[in-house]
Length: 65
Image: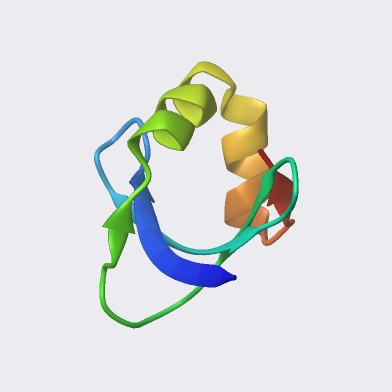
């Protein structure tokens, strides 16, 4: 199952993501356009505390959270 949503970075800019639910994690992939969707607040807190992972997401690397 997949859904669209967004995460805010440290500068409060929205990063649009596609989230795919797996058995034990959720995969995030950046997307370029579309409506906002769901706010992933828990994942946002994790990414704000790990800026290298947030940079990887911005580069287009798929993350497993």
